[in-house]
Image 1 (tube, rainbow, N blue to C red):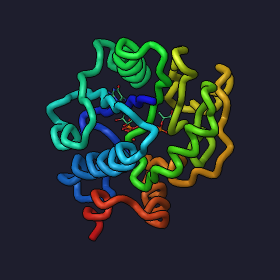
Image 2 (cartoon, rainbow, N blue to C red; image 1 turned 120 degrees about the vertical axis):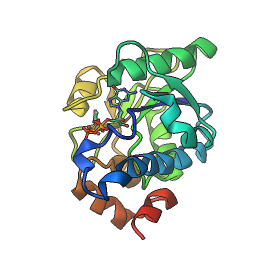
Image 3 (cartoon, rainbow, N blue to C red; image 1 turned 180 degrees about the vertical axis):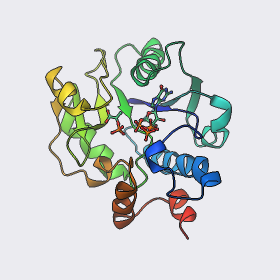
Image 4 (cartoon, helix red, strand yellow; image 1 turned 90 degrees about the horizontal axis):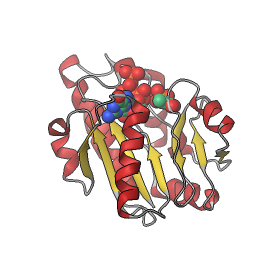
Length: 201
Ligand SMILES: Nc1nc2c(ncn2[C@@H]2O[C@H](COP(=O)(O)OP(=O)(O)OP(=O)(O)O)[C@@H](O)[C@H]2O)c(=O)[nH]1
Ligand SMILES: C=C(OP(=O)(O)O)C(=O)O
């Protein structure tokens, strides 16, 4: 299966985390969260391609070295348009693939949780809610079928209402996205990847 990961310019993203590090290091924190997410993704055997859909590809040069393809976001500059664009590019090359949409703010992600989620989905359109139960961290299409992303506030409910199956596994590392300082404290208890850890030593 192939994955799409969207990213704003690191200077603009994760505004609710502003102040967690010195202001001039905020972009480095956003990049570190993404680098740890991508390190786990690219070490997951079930994942074949990863497309990063970027508001500004030049700002993500260091992520491009991690075995992911960085492309520019489409003219419609919204989160769901970014997901649809990445999914369309992947489908052009393999019309029958499962396509996944993953958030870039999962610094504690472990390959074992991503593998378990893909297995539990079993080819159905399915999603993983965040640990609060309101947001979505991963949405998987059925093979060759539309991804139909509905990310944004309350997306777990929207994904379920659109027929996606909520995955029930514990999946602690996959449910722990980092939106707030409280989320950051939580992922530190799980154990973050090296890029994020380096910013707090
Ligand atoms: N390419 C692209 N990525 C986006 C867009 N909107 C959100 N994202 C990315 O999608 C992911 C999820 O978004 P949020 O968790 O809401 O993150 P955010 O907007 O950076 O955070 P806040 O400013 O705190 O709301 C993050 O990796 C964002 O960078 C967009 O319009 N285009
Ligand atoms: C956009 C979303 O993310 P967040 O909770 O990270 O803002 C979402 O959960 O659909």
